Length: 400
Image (cartoon, rainbow, N blue to C red):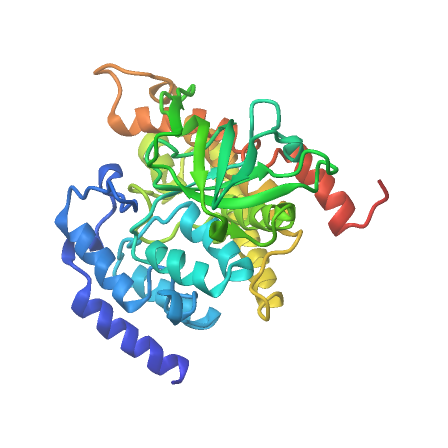
């Protein structure tokens, strides 16, 4: 099928199947998160997710045999464009399922593992979390101490993880455990999956300066995992772990180069519109020339970043796997996100420095908390300092 024919077919399908309420900005309490405990305030959210999952378009570029759409890069771009044309909401925010463990399974999983886990991710049936960092193993991740000992036909897991995003809602975890304490620290690590709904798992949310608790402490006390859920080889999990970090960093950096997709979380008006509302409009331009210049510079950088990400995707078309360039995307993308929040605060002035009370709008309070949340952007997924080291050594080839 030609690309133009695919566009016509896609446009017709979306017009017929996308509910009208799914063609509006997405409120924060209607985000289609996955999982066994998922609830849907708007029934159309579930309808839309199920329709897109049946079509394979919740994860359109994954192979059809695992629940994806089997689309090419060009076809996936057409789908995004046609969804944007009618302002269709993203049908599934798969989080770590679609952006991290899913791609890692496609690359390293057995056929049985792919069929077992990928189809559930595409349908929004499972919420995943990541068990990497530990209280004494953050940037030096390979020093982790959580242990897994084979006991008959199961691994028994003891230890703890920290900064496990969404663990309080997660159904399954992909976890790094030490299975050989005599080996060098980068060896003896195994990458394993297991169910969070068991007696040996305890989760405690961590309250952040934003007032939210997206991160958690997770404790394992004789938790159980099956050997068939080891990804890759026993004691060779560091290879899988590093690759997944590349997927994570690409995701955090913003695969769209900072350009918001249609139907993204919450209403996302342009910086220019917001600045005109708050600072005034002179001949169709933001009244404050300094803010106008900063917004223009930010948008130009966003566009340049988007084009760079697109070019990188074209160059890796054959493998569709990330490279060490993912560290550049993570470093720059998070700085762009932080810069956008700083601009929003400048535009909003003192109205965006509130915490609670009738004197502040819900939107301004959300902006304040989002700004506080961005302070973690340069830490999560590997600090900016770690990314600079990777770029120096692996991209630029500089000596140690």
